[in-house]
Length: 359
Image (cartoon, rainbow, N blue to C red; front, side, top):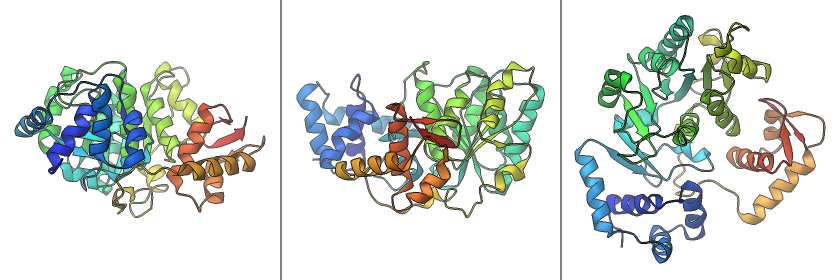
C-alpha cells in the first residue's frame, strides 16, 4: 500500500519505465479506477516490475543529488500542464520549484540564428521577464539560449528532452549550471535518459503546455519551433511570430506562421496587448482544481460534444475563438482536445492558425 509521496512516485516511475508505455497508456488505465495501486496491479500482471522499494530508493538517491520528481496529484505539479491530453504523469526538476507557480511565456526559435535574431530574443526576453513573466525555452543553441540569458535577471525555466542531468548541447554547460542552481530545469524523462531525436517533440509540447503564449523567433520550415506553436494552438494559446527577410531560409517558418494568423511580433506590446498578467490565460497556474485526473469528458459527454461540434461546423471557415464562445458551457480544454482528435481523424481541417472547417 503506497503511503508516502515517494512510494506513489515510484509506482508511476515503474509504469512509465515499461517499454512502449507512455502518458496516454497510463491515463487510459488510470482513468478507469483513479487509483494508483489498481493501475500498478494491472501492469504487474503483464510486465515484470522490480520491487517497489528498489524504485523508491532510486528516487531518494536522485533527491540526494538535488533532482526531484513531481506527481500529477501533488500541489506543486504545474496545473497548466493538465491542459495537455497526454500530460506527463511525472515531471523531474532541478532548481527552484516555485517558478512553476508563476505566469510563464515560451520563447523558441532556430539554432542557426542570426545576430539580430539572437539580440531580439535576448532583449524581448529581458523585457518580458521584467514585467513578471517567467521565460520558458528549450536550452538549445541560438534563440533558446538567448531567451534564457535575457531572463537570468528574473526567472527562466529550461525544458530538456533527456533527463535533467543530461545536457544537450554541451556548449551550454555554464548556462545549464546557472539555471539548475538559481532557476529551474525540467523534464518528463527520468535522470539518466539521453536526449534522442524522438524526445524533442515531446519536450516541445511541455514548453507549450507550461506557457500562456508561444513566441517564435527565426524558425525554418521544418523547425521544431513550429511544432511548439502547433501544440500551443491545440490548447488555445496565442502565437506570436517575429517577421524576417523573405530571402532568409531561417525565417520561412516564422513568416508562414504570420501568414496563417499568428500575431506579428515586433516589440513587447505586441505580446502584452494580448496577454495580461491578470488574464485567465496567464492565470492558468492558479487553477485551484484538486482533481488528479486529466480533464476529459465522460464517454457519453465526449460523443455528445463531438457531434455538437460537427453539427455546428460547415464548409465556411470559422475562427476557433468563435467556436469556443459558442461552446462556452464546456471546459475549454475539453473542446480543444476534441478538436485535435477530430483533426487527426480528418473530420475537420485547420486552414491556418485560427480557422477551421468541416472536412
